[in-house]
Image (cartoon, rainbow, N blue to C red; front, top):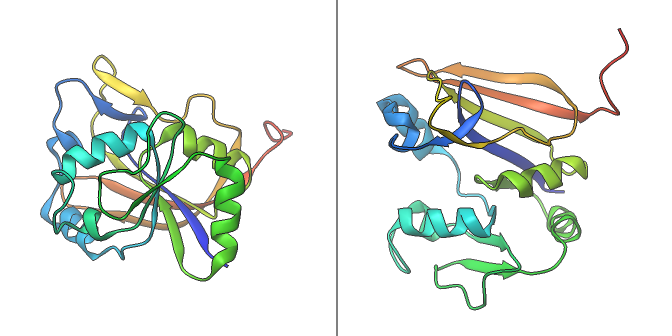
Length: 185
C-alpha cells in the first residue's frame, strides 16, 4: 500500500508565502537545495491554485525539470481537461475517495505540494501517513499569506526525523494522529 506525505514549507509563524518576499523567503541554502534535488520523484497531489502556480514556476507546458517529469494529480472543479502541463491529470471527483484508491494501487509514496485545503481534507479523512514541514527562520506576520494550519483538525505529531540546514531552516517530519479534541489534562 502506498503512503501519503503532506509536505509544506513555512515561515516560523505558519505562512506558506509572503507578499514581496522571494521563494523560500530568499533563504534557500545550498544544502537545502541539494536535499530537494535528492528527493525521489513521487506522484504529486495538488489543487488548482498550486497547479497554476507551479506550472508557471516550471516554465510552461514542456520542459525537462523534475516537476515536468513527475506525475501530477490535480484535484479541481474549476480547471478543464486536458491540462496543458505534461504528466498532469485532472480529477474532478471526490479527493478522499480518489486518494484512497491511489493508496491501494501499489507501493511507494504519494506526496502533496502546497494545496492547503486539499491537505486539510486528506488529513481529516485519516489518509496522511507522514507530515513534513521545512520551517524557514523568518516571521512574515505583516506580509504573510496562505496561513497553513487554519481550520485544521486537532492532530498529535510524533517526531520521526529532523534536520537543520545551513542558514537555520529546520526539517521536521512527523507521524500524525487525529485527535477528537485537546487531550485530557
